[in-house]
Length: 142
View 1 (cartoon, rainbow, N blue to C red):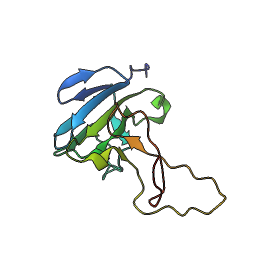
View 2: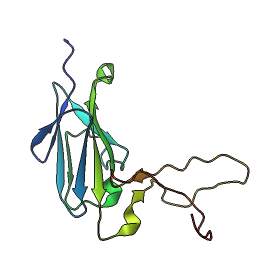
View 3: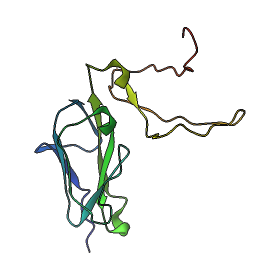
């Protein structure tokens, strides 16, 4: 098989360049479609896809929320072509909820022990957010 080109992504019917960032407002519907010269599938830092056993070329979200913020990567299902992938990073902002400035993948509190390192991963939901500070709930000031 001749090596195909990397897949291409459409966001709401518009073809995008690889490594694109887009900002959407919460409540907006979006559709991501991956086109390639073979079977393709999606992976994401935002959430797990419900049908991982059935690769799909389409991601549809009827009403986006900040938790949909993340990188969506489209690649070929053929492992020999896994180096050919394309991605888009979506920011889902919610101007009506100031507490939604960032999201985490944590669904329960982390098990952190004193004296041990812990990496707290969070994604800003708005690209204009450039300076986040983490502080404990009881701390005062910044």
